[in-house]
Length: 216
Image 1 (tube, helix red, strand yellow):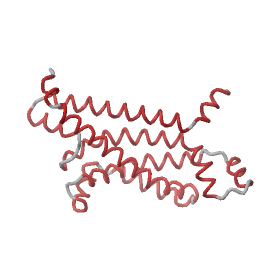
Image 2 (tube, rainbow, N blue to C red):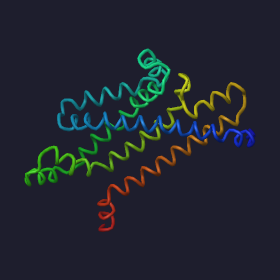
Image 3 (cartoon, one colour):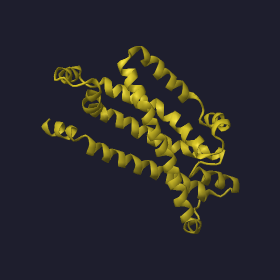
Image 4 (cartoon, rainbow, N blue to C red):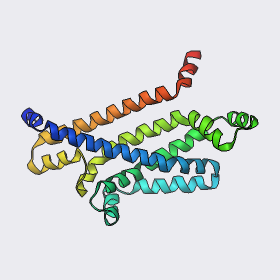
């Protein structure tokens, strides 16, 4: 299977545009997923009776095929980027919600009790103690959700979006392998770069984990 390098050079501008559009859709979905999952995770962590319901609901949404999700959203948001982002956000919820709950669960009870004994209000304890300590587990979920969202953007090509997924459709329709190969490679590169950036971000945001390792 040969690659037409001249096609790549001739379409470098289009490839850049598609890659940027692809990444924007994925990152927007992850950000929205965080906005939705964080309060739900806090609720599930604090109100144990709701934990099973919220996690179960997110699992059910995750089992719906991605194409079906986009099709179901068409009457609401039409053939737009909004449909792509909403669909991807739904898929990120199961990972982000579960990891955030597990992260909050991992915070030692004695740490929360110490904050309470010092007169710290519950909201401040959440923001300054629980969420920071839960951040490594939450970031693990963000990394998984980001890579997953980047891989799923291509499915939206069936509703006229899809970023780099448009290269797959073009290549298959014309029996021309170069766009397909380029689309796969660029998608993998986006996932690798995004994951590396998130690892670096976690490193910066959690300096205490480095001190713990050095102390050990």
